[in-house]
Length: 235
Length: 110
Figure 1 (cartoon, rainbow over the protein chains, first blue to last red):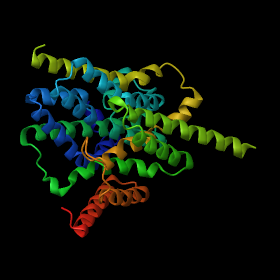
Figure 2: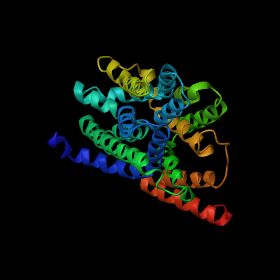
Figure 3: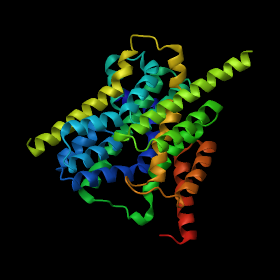
Figure 4: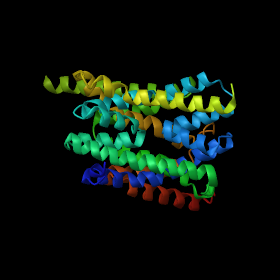
């Protein structure tokens, strides 16, 4: 374990995630505040953030729980919201193949929006798989740890940041920082455009199903575009 | 059901289901080849999913709030340009927050 923590890849991954950890502080605080408002004790608040480790799912579970929804509905809704993890898992699968079973299963636990985007970029840059996996572990550990701290801080101290500072804007900025650099090819721009239109047009779908559907539509559009372009240039 | 028990049951069940979703294809493809067409499509997962995630955050900052254009959209576009060229989360955060604060100060809103 010590050996892993000392590797350059692990430390690089940890360091690379730190700006996003800072940007996501308002999100973690909101989750902690929500858990306190819904009547969780501190252990349950920590349990939720540690076990679920997904801000969107945590907020949704807290809201539904506070509204007195049946447990089955809460679980089902969070499953639908988590459908994107199936896509992350599939995209990550070929890269994690050479790893040992335990390493793979540990990394699966760290698969969140931010850590996934950073990790897949690293793998796609063509670094050796084991080094990129250590980088993923480092970024995952940074994200997970800061997430627990900010959730607990929100639970105990409330929303520390005055709303007038608009620091909640840092949360979408963390996502923009990852997605904007990807818009370098026609299929990628199309994927974003289709996903953007779909997620807004389908906003009335139940259980935030619009997220996963918009993602799939964007992916399909980009793939079709890429294949059509290949055929065109091959002629 | 007892309140605390229901809460912990929910936490464990939601956590387990999320973990199984995260593990699903990592396990499934550990022993199998990923079909070529699927592999091609999966390269667009980050760009499509991150876009779908960020847009509702921008247009309706708090859940249930009416979409508003406000100064956030131009600030976000500026941040996206900075992100495109710098590929740096830190610079994107700095540029986006600075742009938002500047626009808010100029418009006199909050």
